[in-house]
Length: 519
Image (tube, rainbow, N blue to C red):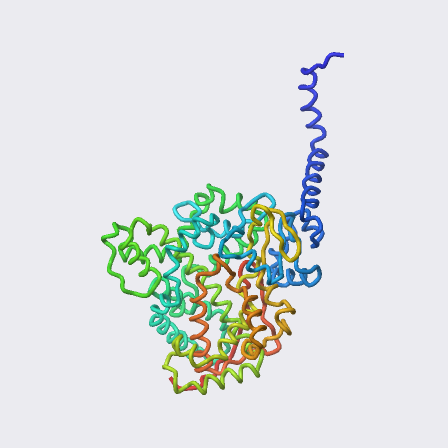
């Protein structure tokens, strides 16, 4: 019998129309099965659903429980946990120098159908386009180039040049607290106001006005929360990004996402005042120690390397990122001090003993030289409550890699969470206890192992460039606060609320403040 192609052409559309539901179901089943039995990952344990689809990660991040659930998974399954079809969470501290090395052969993960886009999603909109900053650049060559451009402005010595501005913010912060010390105060909120104003001084040589206003300015806080939560949740199902910020029509459909970006607008205004909008020779002579003044001097010296747009994007990103992370760390230090009276007593004794050596507003160098126990307190708080709640994701390079005794094929996304690594009982005895003494009295070998396992700023070539910002603020604000006030929890039996998206935010640090000395 001859084959009748005309008859087939007429029949096939009718068959597809009649049977498309089972065909679609069959294709989906094949897709899920291919995910489940992916070569090299099928033997790695984890939640049953996670092997088939990234929905497990999406749901867990949406709930805000990743800081707890990832640790529970590793406690149950071991150092490697499959948390997505092509994604493995790693808890072994020995893997830190493998995954996060100086060579950066483990690159940041791009958005794929079965992967994630934690870096790519964390871009913001400028001139109707999504733009990348130092954190969100995926290409390692581009990142190296940008880091060479901006790295010096993030050095400890450079940031310390802005310390006079920080001292003025600290003075205003203490004055604001003193004026409100007659009744309970949400110190967690005020710490965020402090970080916005202090980062404004570090980045722009100007306060943003939060402390003066006693609250948010231009919706900066809610906008930052929206963008952070969006990035953390959408990165678990990257296809969703194309219905949001990645859609080229989005800036036109919702132009306020750019026009009402208070941090971006303030940075633009400051740059215009300095002459960035004109030719490099019109830049004002900047002698300040803030980030933007550093960049103005760099652009004036080499305008070909330093574009105004690059400087604008990186300066704005510095304000957004450093405010949340520093506020989270400051809250954690205070909360754990108040929850541990013996630690608080030892710290205040050290502070009182150092009083003759301290300026009216404590400087960074004074803190480092005279308050060693404080540094242990800060480090222990960062161990128990790192600011980032999700794994920092990387691609396994060509040729694959052996991690925690298991070979993982090239292209696998791997990541480590500080919330998991910092509670490894093989490294940190009593991992859930707040014990600053571990950083003072441990044997040298143990201290070295603990130091190598600290991951609050990441590691390797992509480690956080803003770590010195947090170091200076925690070293100066915390002792100044407890020098001026007896700080007491309003409700000693009530724990605060913690939600983990990209940042692990806390709510409920309500305290009573009793002045310790006259103004």
